[in-house]
Image (cartoon, rainbow, N blue to C red; front, side, top):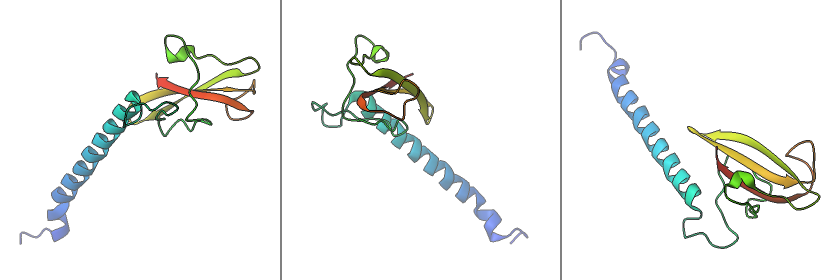
Length: 118
């Protein structure tokens, strides 16, 4: 031995393992984002759409109506548009709901939820 401990000689292996874990986690995140952007894995069944984990929507299976862009979602009479942003990995998402609350997005009765890439 040249005076270095065995653990210091293994550091490159630990580093490679950490990089490998990061790459696998990144690839998994990309796969999940691809599925989220295209709907459900088995082809957009009516009444279902995949929601990013960071949104925590009240009604994840009840998408709000919209015209053109999802950011133009509409709420029925008596409900107010409330939205916020969240980030997963390097992607920013807008999350939104129709609620009876005028002041915030986490109280009131909910009618629908929606999200889009921001």
